[in-house]
Image (cartoon, rainbow, N blue to C red):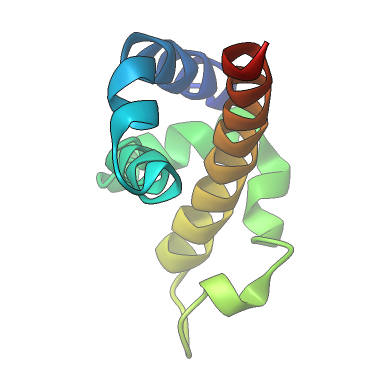
Length: 102
């Protein structure tokens, strides 16, 4: 079963592996968000597993600008997962940036 915790962990490992590529790109923030996009599950069964592991995802994202007009439950879950992964990736990026500057 796919859990949100495992998804985040796997994504952060990917970011760490691709750290040099991210920081060497012309637009590291864009590269970061492309990676986040690639980690969002596309199958309903995986989104259901994430919801089961963290029921509050069903509340949707705190930024409802991420949700299209007349969303389905899948759109809401996808936006909530995107928001969660983006937050974790941005935290990783900030920390990695500090480490690079030191």
